[in-house]
Length: 239
Image 1 (cartoon, one colour):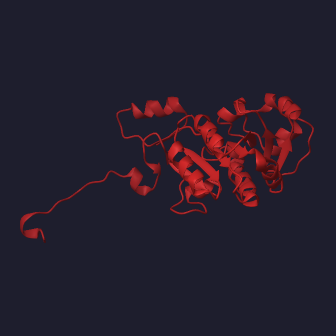
Image 2 (cartoon, helix red, strand yellow):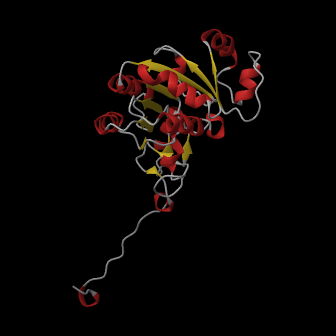
Image 3 (tube, helix red, strand yellow):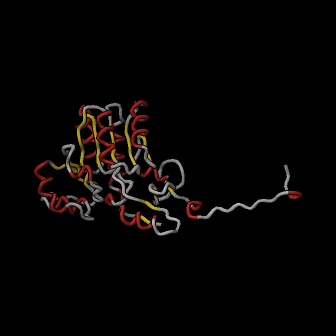
């Protein structure tokens, strides 16, 4: 059983033994104008700040339609996020890509925050490195898009085709259906936090081993077992 980047997953799969591999992820979130923004803001903060955003299923970047982006940011800030501006983000970049709590990141740019702050929020351009990197730290880049379709179009390359995890907040069934099909992820959460897809609040059993590269998806005890079949025939067989 392997969790890690492409290199260690490839090594495990070439070991000659059965491999259950959890590879990299960079889960995008798309929020359109039909979403319940109070719920979306709360769930994005809750999901992306789980274990300081170390978990590979945590939300890593947000694509929000322009008409609701400001309201979504306000909802996120009401539930434990702190927004920083572009100048502050540039000052902070030297401390990024480390296992660092939100309050420590904010202290780097002179913002005092308590332990109740869960996430650092920064609006960025669509080609910002934060969008395309699995940060594993409590900072959330947000990109404005024209509409849901543009958000889906950008979410797909941001996820790098890992087909790991994706999230969408919308009440439009066509948008939800298109994103589910385009992303084709092991976990796709609709109108919830990413950890709902782990069985933590959502349907199914709870597991934190997500074997996307080898196909098991959310693992359970059977995933780690060799299945055998014992057959009886002739007089012991009842038809």
